[in-house]
Amino acid sequence: MKSVLYYVVTILFTLVYCIPFILIFALTVLFDRQRSVLHHASRFWAKAIYAWPLWRVKVEGREYIEKGVPYVVTVNHQAMLDIPLMYVLPFNFKWVSKREVYRIPIFGMVLWMHGDIAIERGATSSTKKMVHEADEYLKAGTSVIIFPEGTRTKDGRVHRFKEGAFLIAKSAGVGILPCVIEGTGSLMDGWKMKMPYTFRVRILPPVSAEEVARTEIKTLAEEVHRRTEEVHASLRPDLYGQEWRKN
Image (cartoon, rainbow, N blue to C red):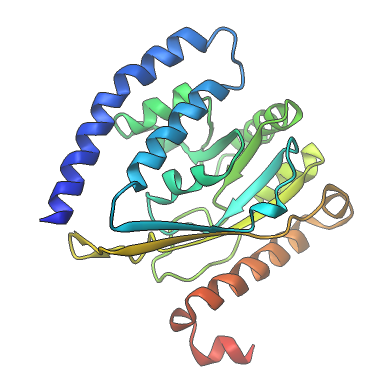
């Protein structure tokens, strides 16, 4: 019954909230090029998604964030709820998202209004456009966030990182802020949601812009993946087993 209530309340809230969201977009789009006002509106929605009495969001590592500094943010991908969860970050950012996500009703419209960055998988021209758009945002002081695995994990583990996020960071000359999430992927028990429940976001020490500049893209991807996997395994050792521990 609790899960049904959550579904109903969340869907109704999202549908109703679309009205002021569209109005905010219409009133600010001409002068707010970074869509920072709209970002604050999204943060309110995201907090409401997680503001369930039996849920808790635990965030660690906020001290690693330098105020006013744009980052390429990397985060492991478990479920759709990863997206509202990452609005715990206290700065404006743009998502890099697959083009097909824009076709999802309401959600795709919100991404478009945000000015988020779309990428067509396997298209070289799309990758170049993504890097250019991300570069423009980062130079303007807006961070960019990406799931470097490229898709959601099927077994809960952190998988190999693609090089797009690291190409963006090197091109723009900015640092990388690795983040680790845990909880969204194991929330569901069939169609029911676990309650009570805790979601975790751990912000790791950033890779400085200087280190990004002097390190090969492949090496950056491997190192950030290693750090992400290591932290995630400490949160969920049951997913990795004895073989991973030996390595």
